[in-house]
Length: 251
Ligand code: APR
Ligand code: ZN
Figure 1 (cartoon, rainbow, N blue to C red):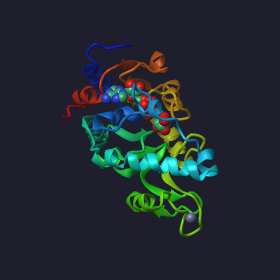
Figure 2 (cartoon, protein in one colour):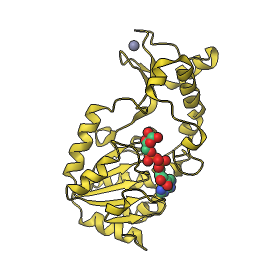
Figure 3 (spheres, protein in one colour):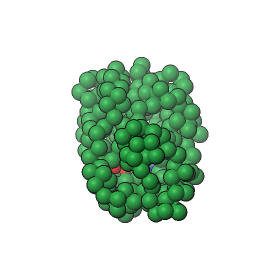
Figure 4 (cartoon, rainbow, N blue to C red):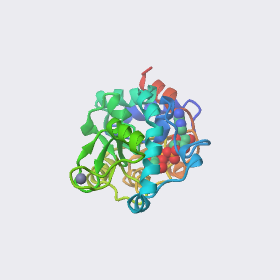
């Protein structure tokens, strides 16, 4: 159901809940200057996704993937947690939120102060890179310098495997432990709050449905309509920062 004074209604649901899970998408980071994917002007309106098998198959696709990542580096570097992130962090600190399941790769929930063990990154993290074969870690700044000199990111210097940001691309296997943890937390909560996701990408978008089917209340705070609005207990088509900040009492 839509609500006029969404923040007050959200505040009431939070007060009544014992075990809250927050589930975030790119929409919580737009107020930090990071574009989302499917809003007008979003990333997938400017370019098409590069699927994992393409990345493996061609140097061209790997170069384009890295070119796109380095083009975003200044935006990622300048991005700081916004009021929405601070409100989620406050809920974690109060012991109200047990886990933040995020589709985001920008690391802003951790930067906002939430302990790593309370964050589940379903789509990985773009703040560093790893070798796909041996897992060796590489720093973005180092790879960027090589890319700008040579026009490509070299294979792993330990095993010659492909080096990729620690993110999950379309067509790439989901992280097993993260998925298991997300499932556990989703089944344990009595309130599941979606913040800033179009809820069109699976398996991630399955978690709000699982929570609802398991008896939790479902809240969706998202500027646009989502396919799961129809099953939610509260839908707020409103900006996350102000709405959640007011409900939680955080500036
Ligand atoms: N306040 C509220 N809602 C917002 C705000 C805001 N400040 N900014 C954007 N939104 C909403 C948009 O209306 C949009 O519906 O957030 C939603 C973001 O949706 P997407 O851009 O589709 O992002 P997301 O749902 O996280 O995408 C899921 O798709 O491309 C893959 O791996 C990528 O993790 C990503 C996944
Ligand atoms: Zn390697």
